[in-house]
Length: 357
Image (cartoon, rainbow, N blue to C red; front, top):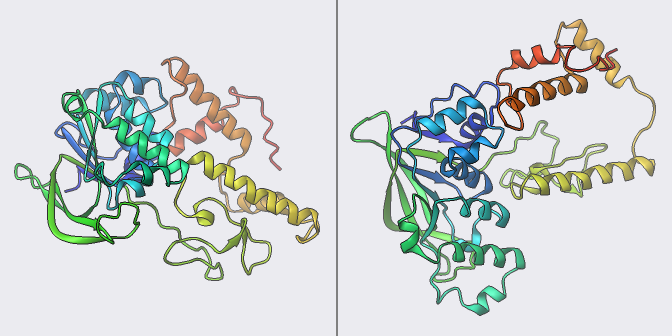
């Protein structure tokens, strides 16, 4: 299946208006149920888009073409979020889950979560505070399964399931009809705090008309000299300073691994910047004058490469905001590189102050 099974990178790029993603063939009309494989914040974001009302999405900066398709074509009423480990290992965070669980008309159910006996008050009290708050929020959100079952839209969190294969729809071999999983269990058994799981022989099939795979991203080392752990994808570093290399730093998931949200990643990048400044001020970094930007601009011009500056970005930003105001939105995103460049060249947007050499 292709029109109804996607990787999150493609799907997220589509609804965020990433250039070149507007032509993604997302078939929403024949899918009442969507299966999202993954329990991270990106998976939650996909679920939020699929379960939000058109009126709510209208207040975002999603492109008009995407909004029309979600409003006019989407038949999705149920979303199943599936993770291979348990509730106490879910990678999403409290704020992001709260936003999803509080959507109007959405009921929350759990499948494969620990029993009340397993989640004793003593166990919960012993959890780190962020994990305890998240667990309590998830349990509270799903405390009325009968009410959730009658909700106009439903979100079900499935735990301890590992995907095996996509199965085609009997009615249409080019569409996904279900996803088959293998049931996992904690190791040791009946230990919901254990991060380790092992597969059982039990197979579980979940019917769906749309499947999205959200199992993370893989970091790639740009140079073999960079000391990257091939298993975790993390570069060996000391607060952002790459170990064993002079004048080399890292940030983001290369530094920390795939966890956290944009805010925590941004905050962590500040720590890397602070480390760089400390090295600069202490004389550990070279300070002799170099050609820098001027040499780069000269090289690009010699090759006939069209480059953009911060002032160009400001023109693009102004153009998007102006288009959005007429639609009652924060902005209407430009969807193609050619249109980006046209907006960047429009001197009517801003005074020319890009400082080009």
